[in-house]
Image 1 (cartoon, rainbow, N blue to C red):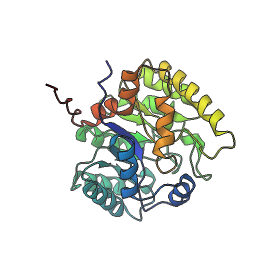
Image 2 (image 1 turned 90 degrees about the horizontal axis):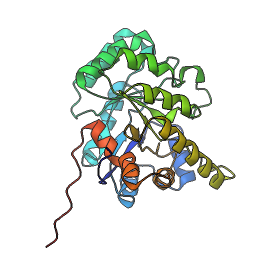
Image 3 (image 1 turned 45 degrees about the vertical axis):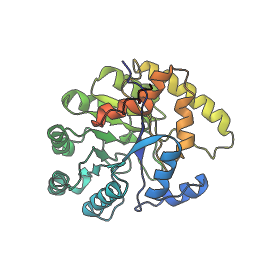
Image 4 (image 1 turned 180 degrees about the vertical axis):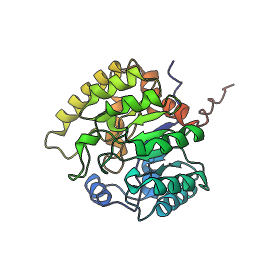
Length: 289
């Protein structure tokens, strides 16, 4: 059953200074591209926490982990840290990065993989140590799937169906299929429906700068609603914004307008993420005398 309404969680944000496109997206969205700016937006929309996905463009793994840890501390624990691993760097580097993740001074809430942006897919044998680490650490694995914001990205590596084989072999690992695999949303839904250890997020599905944005929003909301039904329910669907690619207001409007019950929408907007990430439940409402 969906959880009761409570503080919302954005399962997909990128408040990193190591970004080529972030400042341009932020300028177009008229938002403050900084962790403090993100926190102010979160406060405006009742979002208690956000998952800061490990920056893929940090100069080194140490720099990336240092940034997510610093942001976690400065946000009072609201922007949750994750790591990232690039298997194309070779097995010795993968093992070194996994040692860094294990020694993280702050509690990591997951690890992010960027297939498509880098030339590998989720079934790459070089990722086996990563999945073994995630199983031991009980950390979800967030996986980029679907289109890339970089025109040099390679779509052959980002089909959601590629995650099916990995989810079957690694039942003890929880995977988050990011961006609902757009444009292959029904394919992503089939992977979620089949595999109880696969979740999906709603990040990065909108282009607020499209010429006919209201039509795009209406059609994407219909596609998203059908895809969620094809997942078999809302229990493993997470709200995500992909901030700063989308403002929180735009990303939230996609979910709040879905033709589902209020408890189902609130499960997507926060309850499911709290359950996945092991976050404390929302405080009980104060009793009135």
